[in-house]
Length: 196
Image 1 (cartoon, one colour):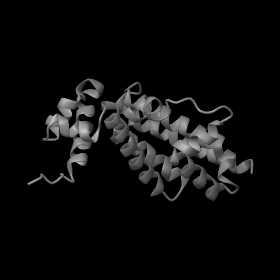
Image 2 (image 1 turned 45 degrees about the vertical axis):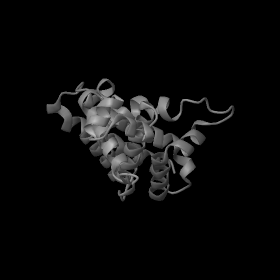
Image 3 (image 1 turned 30 degrees about the horizontal axis):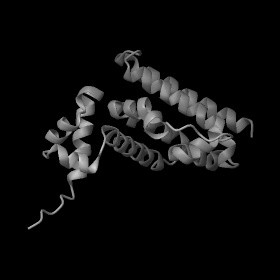
Image 4 (image 1 turned 180 degrees about the horizontal axis):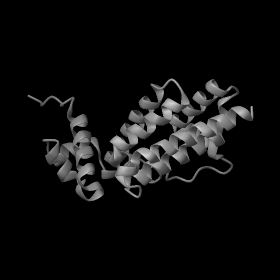
């Protein structure tokens, strides 16, 4: 009698890979280690994820979806920014994987000639489009009017997160750093309203 496929195996593999990534980033995440941690065998991992990068891509997509859900649940741009910081700081390993390896795993092919940054983000970053939509709803106008403001907010949030994750800003000063970030978001939005 043929064995029935395990419907939970893919989740177990990804959960195991996530835990291994948290422990030792890239060095700990081998196919054999993933199989052992997922309580399966190496061929079963290879059947679902033929290459290690396929596992990393799946982890990136999972992180991307989790972050999107956080932003989607917000009722304002300010709340979305707070949720972004909360998620990133409570999932530092996933956040680093996402931003340190996103380009090579998801966007490594050269964009066709004439493709703009705005088009690249539209196709590859649903969170960017969500934030631009939130900005338009809050400030008026079209989402595409807010590409520069969205990039400014993202740069501010990402910089804050990376300074806190890397402990460049000591943990005892984290609240002050977050307050500075919050004030900067408020200032950017106030200026955007003023320029309308």
